[in-house]
Image (tube, rainbow, N blue to C red):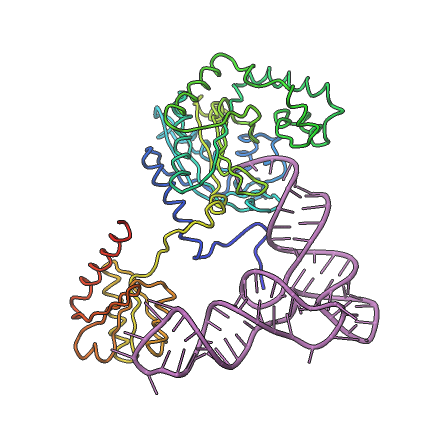
Amino acid sequence: MLSNPPGIEDIFPDQIDRWNFIVDTARDVCRTFNYKEIIIPVLEYTEVFARGLGDETDIVSKEMFTFEDRGGRSLTLRPEGTASVVRAYAGNGDYNRLAASKFFYFGPMFRAERPQKGRLRQFNQFGVEFFGSSHPYYDYEVIAVMDAVSKRIGVGDYELLLNSIGCPECRGNYIRDLENYYRSHVDELCDDCRRRLEKNTLRLLDCKQEGCNALKKNAPVINEYLCETCVTHHSSLKELLTGHGISFKEDPHLVRGLDYYTKTTFEFVTTKLGGQNAFAAGGRYDNLVELFGGKPTPAVGFAAGIERIMLIIQNERIPRRAVDAYIIHSGNATLSRAIELAEILRKNGISADIDPNAKGFKNQFKKADRENAKFSLIIGEEEIEKNSVTLKHMSSGDQQQVEMRDCVEALRKSLNNDTDNEQG
RNA sequence: GUGGGAGUAGCUCAAAGGUAGAGCCCUGGACUGUGGCUCCAGUUGUUGCGGGUUCGAGCCCCGUCUUCCACCCCA
């Protein structure tokens, strides 16, 4: 038996209603904020990520699926979406000449990590990116999109963590002092943190080891280093969030794994994901478009993990999409009438299924039941003689015989009634 | 990449180194034109794969694959 590569999974139909519920909700929320869907490629030149995310980041240095094409150019399966959207935006005059552009996307991402709960090698993200203004309203807006998605999906008990990591200027001062502070305590650090000290000082604040955690208390805090512009931006954002009913928790230790962030960073976190806690994360990246060769364009966005949200709501009941009509026949002439009926129903937008091999009504009713069919339609010898069809409402068991030509109308009416009742 | 646990029927799980089992599911029957409930019967299988130890391995050993958990990191 062949198997999947590790961390690369199939999603079978029994999970699809849940999946679509998440995706449809996200898409609909984006629509209400006037974000436009963009489809970006899965493969990019490696340079897009190396330059965009930073050579020294973990993702680029050890987690990418990279290979050469036949011409010897290095290609990489995208590990995230933002770099691609920025690449696309920067290179497309139809959009980058506009005062503002608003995009969202869905799609699979690839990272060569060791799989565990909530962490796959191929996973799907839903992401939102805004280009064209440094106004804190847009930081608020993308956060509001994710907050609305979370609420509508029913992600319970989540928290929004918020921080500002400043602009390159004020952050530079901060990192220098942070580095000095930790350097003076280097013998108290764990091995990982000594490495972080050389590679990515900000990540020292993430360590969960006891010794390093203790050092955190007296470490310099980013807030005190932010320049006036960054401070103003951050407090405006906080006012907007508070003023519009989005609660958040300030976390001065919240840093992101990618180099491109400036000012705002945020994470939506929950305790339901095992060792992982974030199901969406993002921030502002005011310098990335320029880095990709575009004109300087402030931008802000986030990405959410669809599989992680699937895990969070795995015990919630999601309405199951079921076939409208299961057609039951008794072979021969009744089968060909049954097939005709299926065709008529389908052309009228009513979903219909049929099993040509089925023998016996009992057998077919069982299948209808298993398919969760709303109606069973019987076409047997008796119905053929009368040119009629018997409709059986499966949940109530009610049954009526109607003229063949009235079948579509009768079904349509009953299906609408059911929908109204469900909604009411 | 590091460290630990696990892998037996479609699923959830049993089986002191000595003949592979239960529940659910599935198939059929009781009920030949009526599903869900009940009862009865039946198939559940290369014990992940490959080696080794042993008279004998689902069980012990080695390797490998997959999976889970944690670390690293991240959605």
